[in-house]
Structure formats: C-alpha cells, structure tokens
Length: 160
Image (cartoon, rainbow, N blue to C red; front, side, top):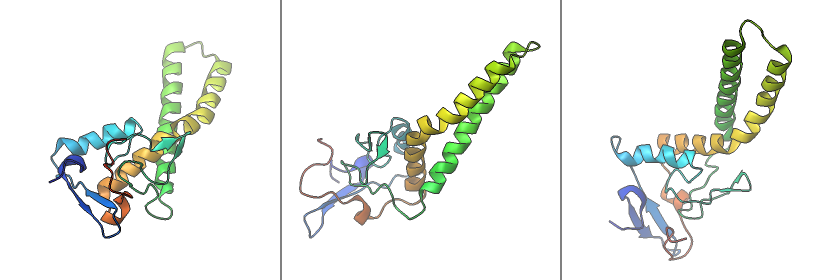
C-alpha cells in the first residue's frame, strides 16, 4: 500500500508514466463520511485535494488525483436538480420563518423582496456546492476507473 493513495487505496504507475490512484472505501469507514465534508468544503470528493473549483467553475480534472469532473454526458442534470431542491428549501424556510415571525401583521412587500432575492440569488450562489455535491454522489455510486484518476508524471499528487 502506498502513502500516495487516498483512504487506504493503492497507487501504481501506468505504462505512460502516469500515476493511478485507487481508493475504494469500505461501506462502514470514516473515509466515506469524510467525502461529504470534502464536498461541502468544495474539495475533490475522491482525494480531498483543493483546487477543484476555480473562479466559481469546476475544473476539468482534479489537480491532485486527476479525477475527471464530468464523468458522463448529461451528468450535471443531477447537480441542477440538487441545486433546485436546496434553493426551493431555502425559499420555503425563509417564507415560513417570515410568516411565523411577523404574524398577524404580514408585510407583503418585505416578503416579496426577500422571496425574489432568495429565488434569484440562491441558485447562483449554491451552484458550486451542488456540482461538487453531485460529483460526490456520483463517485459514491460508481467509483472512478483507474483511467479517470490518472495523474500525469511521476510526482506525488498530494504535495501541491
């Protein structure tokens, strides 16, 4: 076992000189839960490396483990669905708390402004977390093949 591999996996070189990392996680391990925290911190859900988000956009591959962020065509439909669910939840919580706090004198204009602001800003602000969160769900459902985690060169991907 190599110290390069995340979560107790193995690291081995390919013929091309690229390093392949495998980090299969047993269902009861703490590493599986750690992947969710990594996603919330906008880190790679496979290796925990930083730099998967640049300028509020997901990069093509993780700079540490080489995980391809777009693993299948149409993958981001799930991220958009997750973003919609979280955004609507934020809107309903805001409106529900507003009704409870201000009942019986309901300021309709304040509700309208706060509701529209949440409806417009929440999807935009939460999109990076939705994308990395959906990538974490995807990685959990189907762990990457060695070809999806190839890092070019012989360097240690966890030293950056």
